[in-house]
Length: 184
Image 1: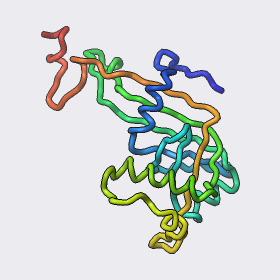
Image 2: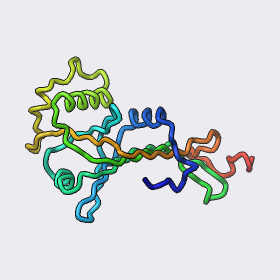
Image 3: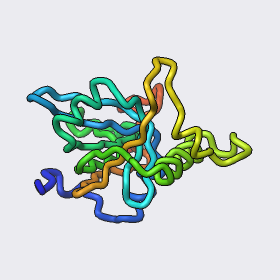
Image 4: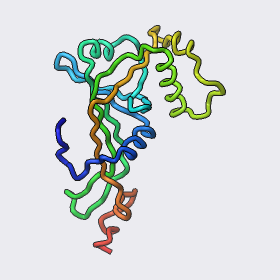
């Protein structure tokens, strides 16, 4: 494990990290194969300490995973810009979490269906009248003719950083340095 360089921004609160991973909307799966990096933005769900996502059962991502299943999954959300009259002190309020582990195909239909149901509950809560049927997960084929598969990354390591919003210092359209308290 590599220590965080900006250790003052490290977040070690598991409740905050879990809450963030549960509500954030987009994650980025980072893969590497034959010295070629590849990062894919994905919808995902965090459940039972595991990142789940779905996608085609063939293509570049799968080829790379077959060569090297080690991955990094990053989730980050910008919470605004923190202003300062000194340009070099202008900063960003954010939360980010990086999860390192190995990606595996979810082979058990029950687990895959539960993960997909959790994803539906996250992205379209209350939209469907009935729970997702196992048969739908088992038989679904995309418009490109590829079977959809569910994957998971069980993290071996998790790091998190944050820089909280600072009341009165957040940028808004039309704000100038003359609006800062030190210039008032």
